[in-house]
Length: 194
Image 1 (cartoon, helix red, strand yellow):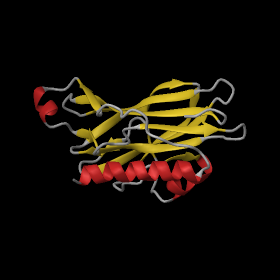
Image 2 (cartoon, rainbow, N blue to C red):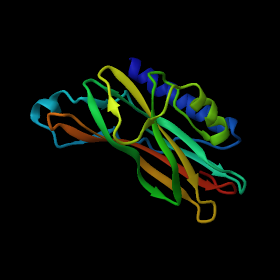
Image 3 (spheres, rainbow, N blue to C red):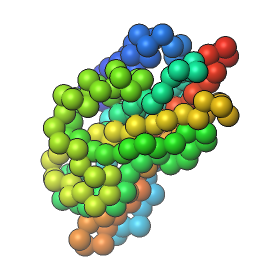
Image 4 (cartoon, one colour):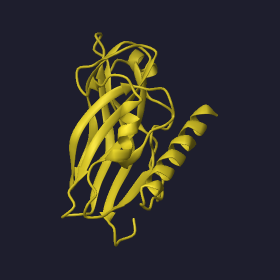
């Protein structure tokens, strides 16, 4: 029940934030469930050290851009470490006409991810503790983390798209996997429907 409410809370937060920014947002086709590709032993696959939290940010989110729009913040990908692990890398899986300006982690167990213009996203950034690197960070057992990405759509060659967010982790015993939050972010021209 909690994970359904968490997913619903994230969807409502993302939709409200995008609409508040003067943009149109809607979920088109629901994205498939989060996936994991593992190279770990059978024990680690039965009980992974790191899992995506609830439904993560799963969905398709769209925003219409004007010529003056700049960077955007995405923080809908959340994961929990059930055992100590090392973050090998984290960030967008596939990009089209969008650049990554920065990627980091924060400890965050709340259900308030965002997809908003950067000035609004700064409030999200300010309320969290120190930033952790997007590669090489030590993940502590029992801690929930949120991937935070600052994105810059290339206004000229729109549409822009981010297809999924990957989190790759490993453990000292050789376990590890790449988790994929299949959320899709779309950036369209202001004169087109998302």
